[in-house]
Length: 466
Image (cartoon, rainbow, N blue to C red):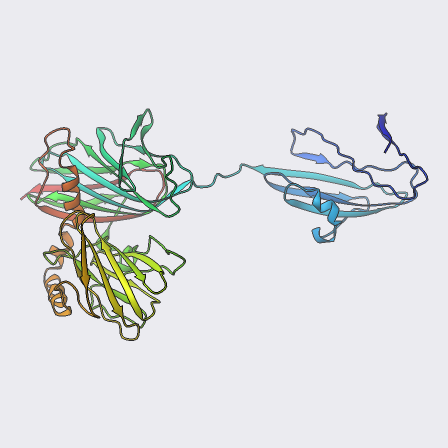
């Protein structure tokens, strides 16, 4: 093309080869529109005997578009349009038309749209929150919140503590961090230089609330902070001094014993590892029976008490395939779809030595593998060699005896403190800013709340001195 000029709404194009029978032109026009409707412009050649054309409408952003055609314009499928025309689009296509202009026709296209704000992608989510609260006779409460975080890009976890509360310590992926206090809450760093894990990791912090001293009888409220990540499931254990009888629980959370066991089973929250299917654990307190291809058992502490929330990692040595599950409230775990061969089982629980065992697994006739953990640091390792059966001194007969004891005292078992209480008692030693009489004897009450979205969680109760 030699040149172009616009005069009185007429675009004149001068070509270098006027005798050429075919010409192609790409003409771009732009108009700023503040309204939510517009008429599409149609270029028309002056004194043309015949005109055919195609029109593509694309929309930038999230919009709902209505197109009204007239004057010989016919709607067509996107796939019917010229490939070159489609290649010019930069946004999603909304509508397509074709026209064959007759002398008495004037194609017209009226467009109306509604634009919606683009929703932001969730930067982080907590697959699970395990909360433990110790309440003292002075009314102070010490609470540990352990979050299993899956994080894409969120740099901080914003924690809006209740009035009168302060954070004592915080850890991210097992390393201590220092929260930053701001006008709208505390911020626990989630991402550090060189730390961008692909899988989920643990974020935990402990806070103390001053509260009010217990009287001979009365009522009390416990409140968990707002956190700016969605929480799929929150599990809360409240440990109260044994000299008080409590009842009339209320608030946002539900008493765990009111829910069927299956709804509390979140042991597969860690999900699949290395492309293998997710594992799961069972919550009913019946004799553990395994199907072909399954591997499972029970984890207890040195006293024979069940250890919930212990992480069990099963690795098939021949293939390197690995999966991880977490024990349920009865200390049980199960994984499926295993093949016969050499298997390594590693058990980790906070406050206990790591236990590792290699076994010859028979997928056709699986037998439960039961573990007794030793108190100690997680960095200490206990290796066990076992055949297809019970481990570390706890046979199936021993476990059946433990089960009978639990059935005889169901209420006592429900109120017995889990290892989380002991772990919190150990964690807060040496970090308390004031002298606090940490309760060593008492009863535990368990609550759950699904899907917590940037809001406080509250439990209330009445009490009376025994």
